[in-house]
Image: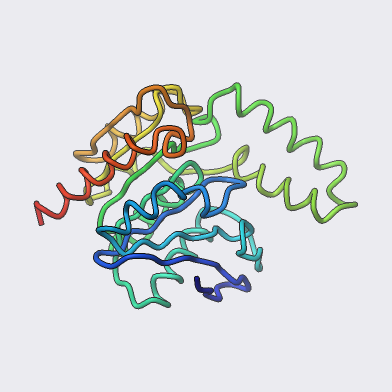
Length: 238
């Protein structure tokens, strides 16, 4: 367990294992505990760094905007504090959006990319999830001035309903090995996931059977095997 200070926030992370660094980024309203079924398995081969995103888990909110540029900077702050030049980056949901943002903003920090259930823009989230989230965000706006808890909840909803803004054309500049992996019943429409995969040069695409958005949690044995196979392939072709 450790903490890193960045832009007014105290960022919490947990570290386990040895080898090439592998960063795990959870989704909206989650915490690093989401990866409970991944950390011990991955740590047998890698130096695993699981982060609590700013304003999640044991990480504080800090200053300034809460957006994917800031979350990308936070990953870099943790890497800098630990003396890590580059790492394999695995991001789930909003963590996947952060991973893509980092790969575009500072590609030298990304050794390989595992994108799990990410989206490029708010409409990349399926309507059956996006519409209720938008309604909740709008409703919370009326109460937010009266409650810090509601303000925080609304801010996290805003990450879903007003962000991200990742230009699809920019994905062609990603030059690291990439695995796009989703559940076959993911909240992200299949056409959107396929757009991401075909826009990143030589990206691999895998659907986890009998799983939804949280496929790492629902089918950990399938998810873990796919990730480890991908990483082994990356290392073999260095």
